[in-house]
Length: 232
Ligand SMILES: [Zn+2]
Image (tube, rainbow, N blue to C red; front, side, top):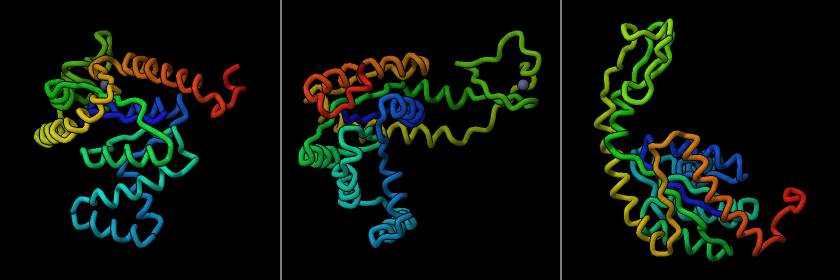
């Protein structure tokens, strides 16, 4: 199966992808990783990307799409990619569909982690650190245990927060740019909304339950792809 995961910055997308990658033996693909790997290779394209990134410009869709093709066409990753932060716009989504189709694949599921801006603000502005031991807490979501001997109120300090406006801007950009992409996937009815405000374990359980269904389904229609030993 191939999956796309969406979620605003600060929604816990990274943590969830990590869990899923491990449990379902997937390969996580983000455009950031793709670009970094190409730069590391010191290829002609890599040095071109390096100068674009260094100049602070955005790498074009054409370049990103051609790097995507390298991965999608690679048999080692066939039907086991989780796309993280990609596709970012409609043209990338259409291109990805075309690429996958050419290589006998498709997107099976799009996961959208939904977290409100209000929650993201609280996660940032509520952050507190114990000045004695360095443990971190949150004024709204995670207060120290009442029986604590160390992290008492008087030791809990908030850090100055100049990141808040950046976070708000990133959230708004995310909402604006992903909306058309989600519409695109909604048309073929493969988007699952997940409440990103639940605890990490509950989110993971819900995502896993969807993936289990897909794995079962794939297993029925294409059993030859799987090592039977793992299913007995
Ligand atoms: Zn403490």
